[in-house]
Length: 273
Ligand code: IPD
Ligand code: CA
Image 1 (tube, helix red, strand yellow):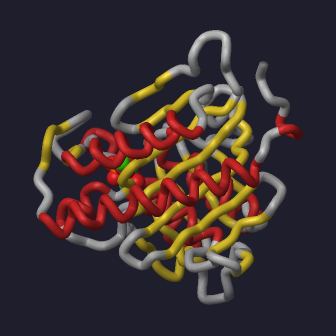
Image 2: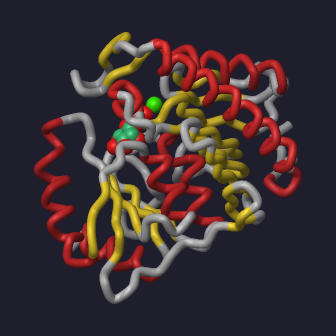
């Protein structure tokens, strides 16, 4: 039987996600210290996967399957695994084992494990994010949120920031496909007048977690997959911000915008000007 949103045990799901994210992050960090190499390329030559991405996702999948065998999983490296017939819980785990893989490959410590539990179909137009965890192993910072329960960094409650007269600190990203870059640059040029400065840090889940924490004022990027923003998007909303895509649309491949409500509108107008 599918669980209705009100009956979801968010406390239990969060505790599990936190445990697994910490274990997965520790494994990623260990493997990084041992040395990392590209295992394969994906959509383009720049879009890489390492053995560690696969191993960390395998660990997350094994832990989830052992703890909650009736749940479905959507992971960046392993794709969609349905719940067993006859015993679905209605929960899908949306997992990015290492977000910021290129940083990871180059030894830049800005990468994270991102784990969300959603009800509904695991696509942003249809899901309800129930819990989200973004764990940055190198800083040992664990951002977490539950639906209706706020967004937190440890025991500190998070609130999105509001830009000052100096302008907004805005993060963005550029997809791996060179064919999309002209459009990315044109959008960036239109957003630039709102910005005091721009960041391109290389991990979408952390961009979103940092918006939730007020470390960034806003963020926009084309080309994200569900695992890039499932957990981070909940963090932003629970920190009082807005997350969306095309005007009045859900976040996704076409566009993801995250910011406090007022800046959200201004970024959206600039992106779609
Ligand atoms: C990528 C990062 C990057 C963003 C890309 C994502 P990955 O995820 O989040 O910041 O610009 O769109 O695909 O490949 O490192 O898991
Ligand atoms: Ca990844």
